[in-house]
Image (cartoon, rainbow, N blue to C red; front, side):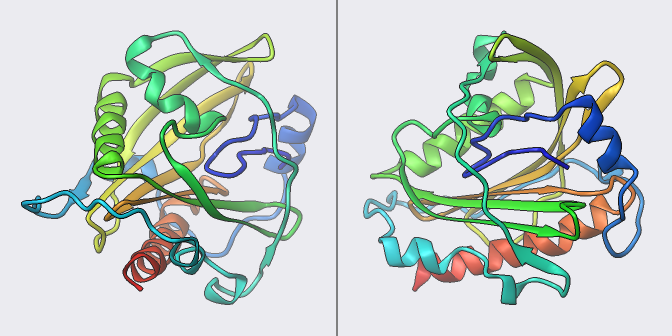
Length: 241
């Protein structure tokens, strides 16, 4: 599937009806399970500390927190995509914090390492990014993002003059980090055609990791649970190194 959600989900959802139809007829990822949307909503967070962490993660810590192909189940391969300059606009001000999920950078953050992986002919795709903040910036970002997810079950996004109906719902986030927020996006890329990537945004100290999985809806829940946990554990370990 030619979906490009690149570097912290910062590429255009440039999916044509032709390529989407071809992708939906492609191979399935391994395993099978009920749809992830059936899971109860959950956000995890650790007990608040008395003092917010102030030191940003180093470049080495951010790099150590990103998955490598050797960390993934067999069948995954490293891929690369061109960066997209597309900027997304959202029709509701209370949803603005969600715009970087579609395309763009997180204001106030410093970029770290990124990674992209795929299975087969891009039948399933992973994109991951780690960023860091000064002071309490990471905690503030997670708070704003969680509020936007709660306030914005649906909205319209626009990029390059194209409007797309978008909805989201929280899904279960893996344990192990200071905070974690997981949700599923549903983006109508053409009339009657949607892509439904699952995402997790994780905070450890002053660092934030964003992870996206786009795969067959029939296996999305099982695949996402395992891969999101792998990504979370490695990010936490890297941030603490």
